[in-house]
Length: 262
Image (cartoon, rainbow, N blue to C red; front, side):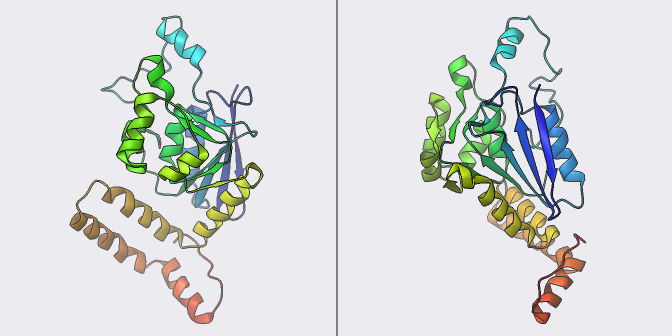
């Protein structure tokens, strides 16, 4: 039985650790994880999340292939009644708007559904033993989980198609070269690096952080002029927040600001 360990810290950061039945963390990208992400999104005291896998071998090696084979053979029922035209519950993978930043700390295998999860996160940090792939094509079906849509937005089209059309794995250094991850670090330093990055993010006014993320992601689907207009619309209300005033006071008083998310 998989579990999601939810470590809510006192610095506005939460660490979600996915733990499966074995050290490959199979099947952890499921309703339990999405429930925790919903909890994070709704908690005003949490401003940034880190998602990682338990152990040192895998972020997650994907879904439960035995269960999938049984489903394809008609031996078990589908987990939901979702179809191509009737989507299942919205999640960050299927397009749920979550403007709080999420960091994926990828510690080992990141395959299939887990690859979709990592791509749905905003920043990816990888350990030296990390490997990435969407291997569904080798099983006869195109990759889902938003990967065909997000991967060409994350890396150049050629490398994205190479990954999608072969289903082959790439290692951490190749992922870094293609821009799939922000940095590659030794396994023992992964969480320290991810946490330091999260702390740098939450050192900024949280409403401004969320507006910045929203402006960037929405603008990907807009013209330059439309994106600039959106940024302007988001900029004005942020100027009047308590946190914006606190930022200016703190700078004048040469002290560290204390933000409240208001």
